[in-house]
Structures are given as structure tokens and as C-alpha cells.
Length: 237
Image (cartoon, rainbow, N blue to C red; front, side):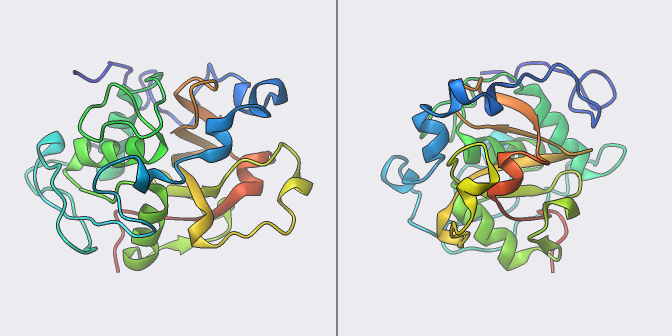
């Protein structure tokens, strides 16, 4: 399936000034009974072949969707040197690719070789894979472990996020800060991830009821309360 055209940064695509967002992710009438939002991609190892519990694999090289095979163990991935960076660097390649899938439907345990539907970690993985040939782990916990292991820029304060970073979250428990007081933010409880755009916005996919691939503010709402860690995929140790 060809990626849907949605534009490039500065041309109506994933710019830091993106408009047209809706409030479904923060509407309690939508979110409170949204089982997929609560679950995230937890348990994905039981749904998707090749996803190991708690730890994934990663490799580099290849070009876009043809580089779907993963190497044993976890190793740092790098952009395919045959792919030229866009103006602004490889981050813009990734976010331009992410923009093409805006509105793509959500499916828990989506086929990792077919971009017609995504869950959260399939979407972030595909964005790096299709844009740069970087084969990241297949689930959010493993992607977080990958960032923690190999990135030279890792943080637990969401206000330190930079454009193109991967952001990681625990599952949804409610819209208010009190719902997350005392909640464990251990790596094993991560169940959601997204790509940071800048200016407080993230592109991600959270559930079918909230509309598939979408853009949301991450500050002063449950995304900030749920935040565990973030970091660069492109800046390696």
C-alpha cells in the first residue's frame, strides 16, 4: 500500500504549528471506556510474531520497507548512507514520512510489514524504517530500552524533548494528575510511544476511538502525567 500523501513540514504537513487537532484524546466520554487506550501495546509479544517480552531487537541498513528482517540481539541502528538527509537533517526525513500516514487507522497488533494500519510502536518503527532504513524494535518497551541503551540524549523531563525524539508513556488511567500519583514508571510499564514534533506537539496513534494517527499537545494533560522517558534515535553514544 502506498503511503497517503499529507505534505511535508512547512507545507501543511507535520510542522510545529500543526492545526486541525481535535480533543478526542482528552474527552472523558471517549477515553474512560476506551480499552485500547488503557492497554496501549502491552502484551504485544503475545499478539505479534517475533516480538519478545520486554526486550526487542534492532538493526540498521536496508532501504525502507525492504529492511524488515531483524538481527538477533539489540544493536544500534543507523541511517542507510544511500539516503540523503532533507534540509534540517535526518529528523525531517522521519517526520515527513510520519506525516504521510496522518489519519491511518489504529489496529492493536498491526502487521509490521503493512502500513495500512498501525498501533503506536508499529507507527514509530515504520516511520524510521521507511524514511531511513533504520530497523528499530517492534514494541514500545523494547524501543524505550533501545533508546536508553544507545542514545546519547535520554531524559525523564518531557520539557527536554526535541524534534524527532521518541517519547514513552505508561498506560492511560484517567485525565487528572491524581490518577498517576504513585503509579510505577518502570520500563516494564511502558505501553505507549510517539514522535515529538516540537512546540509541545506529538504525532502518534493511541486507539481506534481516538482516530488513529493524530497530533496532540503533550503538556498539562494526561500525556505529561504518563510520561516515563524520551530520547533521540539519531544521536548515539
